[in-house]
Amino acid sequence: MDNFTASIETLFERAEDYTRTSAELVKLNAIDKSADVMSSLLSRLTVAIFAVMFVLLINIGLSLWIGEIIGKPYLGFFIVSSFYLIVSIILYYFKDQWIKIPISNFIITKLLKKK
Image 1 (cartoon, rainbow, N blue to C red):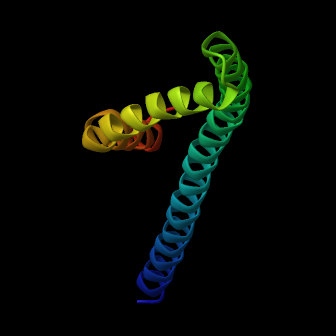
Image 2: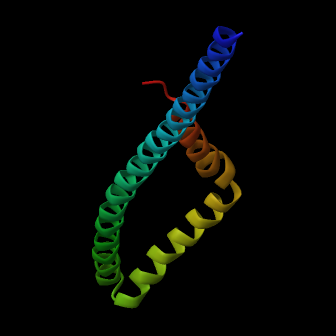
Image 3: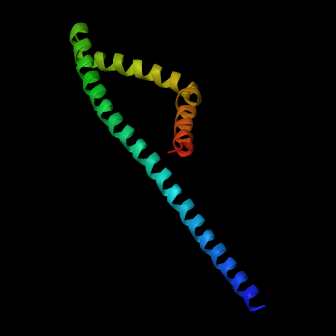
């Protein structure tokens, strides 16, 4: 009987160790996936910020150049801003297809990626 009790206690200790180890593994996997997603998003955000700065400066130069050709500098800015208004309207109507779904797919792919 004493041997049986010792076997059951050993079994419970092993089950408890297994549960702790499994919980720790789940926690570490969640941390790993979160860090992977965040680092990917932050690196893409950094590249996007530099791209936006480039586009901003190109647009200012383009606006000044168009304004110089037309003869009135402010008209160049109106023309370039009108272009962006049209692009914004198009993006609004296709935002799910062009922006939301690809970003969701990217995050899901990163989270489900096996190492």
